[in-house]
Length: 254
Image (cartoon, rainbow, N blue to C red; front, side, top):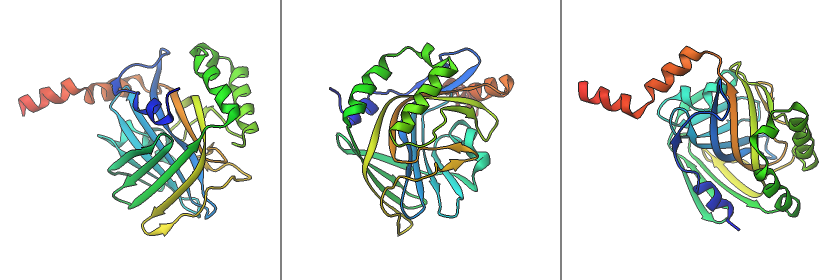
């Protein structure tokens, strides 16, 4: 059976189109959300596949509730700030490095702000059964609202709280998160600008960003997400501007 590290590293970089017409998409993995007992929350998104360019982001919520998103991406408007930036106090570009130090252990390093974050995930017996079943289900099973709600109830039973997999993002995009495999965070340590963030915890109430709930406990997920295209002209323009062939032509003519 492939390890968690192997599954994430097997996702190759690719510019593509969403599986459903009229949508934009991402495919990859990340730490869906991880609350600490200090009141801090961290999240990680690694999306090698989307319509624009590969990117990775680190999200941080401080104990006062202020969100920041740091993106290792060619431009901010193709990454997570595209959907969640309106709910942030700060969005910025940053260099984000990832290293799997063991089959289920990940180290995340950000240069500015200075973040050292270690995450270990564990295979649980119930997810060992559910993950292969979930991964085998066709994408069409994400269309019916009742089946999406059934997945949300299952996430609640696993201690993730009142998670919502579909809804409106702070940007106004209507989105659907489709995790295919999930792994519970077993251990984690993080130091941000010299401050220890404490121990992972399970919150009574889900942390939210712009009204969108994240898990009440640490979860690493592999899967994809789609958002309905709000402005077809803007989407087409961004696709064109981020096309490597467009960049090559600019270099030739400059």
